[in-house]
Amino acid sequence: MPEFFSAPAFVLWGAPTSWLEVLAASLALVMVGCNMREIHWGWPLAIVSSLLYFGVFAQARIYGDALLQIFFAVVAFWGWFQWLRGHRADGSALQVTRLSPRGIALVLLACAVAWPAVALFLRRFTNTDVPWWDGFATGLSLVGQFLLGRKYIENWLVWLAVNAVSIGLFVHKGLWLTVGLYAVFAALSVAGYLAWHRRLPRAIA
Image 1 (cartoon, rainbow, N blue to C red):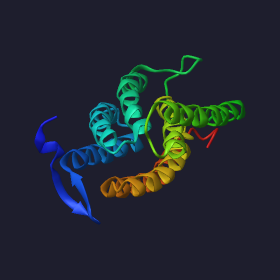
Image 2 (cartoon, rainbow, N blue to C red):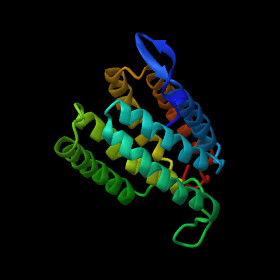
Image 3 (cartoon, helix red, strand yellow):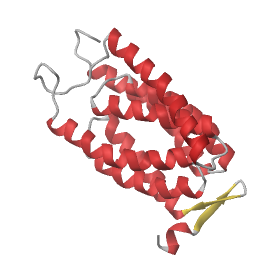
């Protein structure tokens, strides 16, 4: 990594903020804005932002979130394809919709399994000091990314939970710019839900 990116851009509350974190945060904000408007260019921005945040989180020893960024970068290619070419099981075009009651139950089950599974993995195989908080954000992000790729409106609710917990995690690590970014993400999760709700077909709105 070029030395410039690891150099501090400024200091927030006694903690240096690198140019790498500044760039990653800026791209992530644009990405979420694209997602809210169903603009498919948000996915390539997600790829670049995720790779940059891998470096940020690895330096902070938040390994679950660091590995998650690699997953995000790979899955973003799938999400990009879904938004460009994807369709529902009945062959209809992919558009914003709600989960069925069965789908909600499966999502809750997936969250309940992913959180402890990731947390125990991190506790066993890394030197992270926050395995359960890191595991929560990582595990639920896996679920949220799938729901976003398939344009289920509930993805915004999952991201709201992830962002709220991540704020506390990044405060603990002194990543103050990212704290501010995730506070904005939390607000955008609500805004995104409302924006997608207006796009729901009237029959299911």
